[in-house]
Image 1 (cartoon, rainbow, N blue to C red):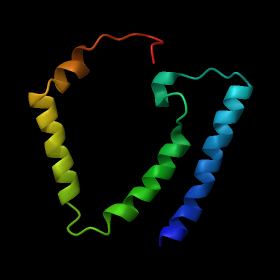
Image 2: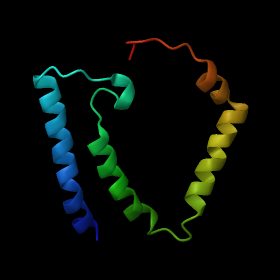
Image 3: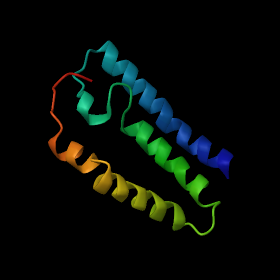
Amino acid sequence: MWKKTVIHTLPLVIIGIIRIITNQELEYQEHVTEYGVHWNFFFTLGVLALIPLWITHRKPTWILPAVLLGLYQVALSTRGVQEFIENAPRRGGDY
């Protein structure tokens, strides 16, 4: 199962690499706020295709999302993450 999924994901990674190279060679305008400097939508699709392989081997499958959701809520409520997300100073170009 891993091998088949990786083979099907490989074209997305290749397209992502080609996109990075062509954007840099053509000096095409890139917005760093969209995906960062060296990330793009094709890499996101490739990673998302591999995640179910890791999750489906664990039973029951609802535990991981529930724990992540709980930890995120704790971080928002008690660690000041919500305040940072809502009110952090926005600096253009300082990435």
